[in-house]
Image 1 (tube, one colour):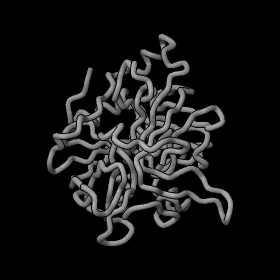
Image 2 (cartoon, one colour):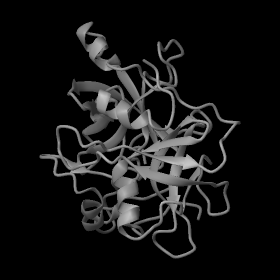
Image 3 (tube, rainbow, N blue to C red):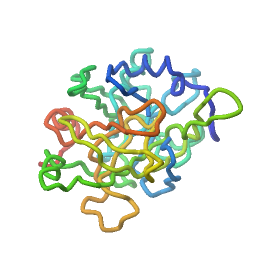
Image 4 (cartoon, rainbow, N blue to C red):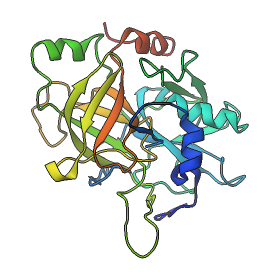
Length: 282
């Protein structure tokens, strides 16, 4: 399928989104979060892809979430995406990943098997919202993103290194809310986009990032869940950690205009799951 789609999938149905996520986070709405107020990514981040399944119309592939190649045969995404697919009867081996910058049903798809973090839960303190797709055939022509060392963000915070720190979100989700000509709605172009956010707060399992367009930021929305948040501004060529995904998009505000709340990858709990699928940095 190509071109922009309006409210035709579960990604944009409020009731379906709530069923999908069931993360009872106060004051925020968990999201299968396109990048709002962002830019087309092109081939800037070729290791960012879309999780694809035949979950709306039998025999028709559709994007459900975003994710990142973190090893030749390992694609990282969010547990609430894979758990939802399994809850509606999609077999673990009936998923695909595409790295095409524009999703089309005639595109390039890599078959794999999804694995949901067994520690996934609904607790705000640490929901364990991680999953991987182990690809049937390793990808050799795309360089995987790197993962952070354990405790990297805590170390930066101690040194005040997170103050005004930019992060780059990438994903295939919904465009910013469209108002006028009917009820407010989101459009799903199924195009890889990026947005630059700014650090707001750090918690034990989360990073809160500002994506407020009024302050020049951009960020994630419905369909971007599972997508990466890279450390640094991708427009800055002097990054300390280029291509390092330090968190994945999990939740945020319902209007996709204020805060992107992302799940950290440098914690012991995140590392415990990831180490079952690839070697990770100390």
